[in-house]
Amino acid sequence: MVELSNQLQGWTLSVYKFGCAFIHFSAFHDYSDSNPFEALSTEEKADILSHLRYYHGGPQTDEPSFADLASLFPRVFDKIAGNLECYIKNLEEHEINSEA
Image (cartoon, rainbow, N blue to C red; front, side):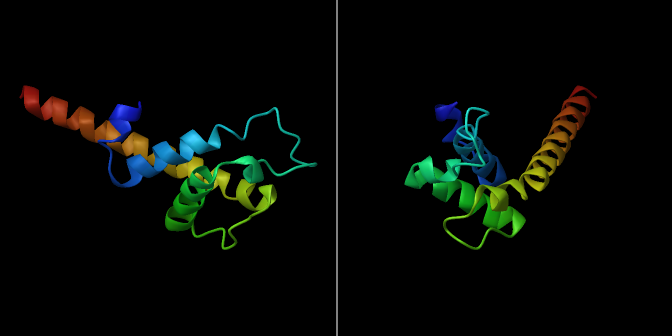
């Protein structure tokens, strides 16, 4: 995956980096007692904030609460799903056109 990610550009690279950092927000954290964002590396924080700011308009603070982040997650995953559906459709159409 790392080798492949080096070839990615635009939204695909941003989604990859976001996903790599997002994995640390697992069910093993008690979000009411601590903010798992604070435990991320500086690079992972930057990847998440960069993606959220560029594609979803926030958060504005460099140290958001988990509630600030969680409020954006539904939009993030809807956007990723929509992009993937579009990308797959384009791949399928290309394959169909190539066979004709």
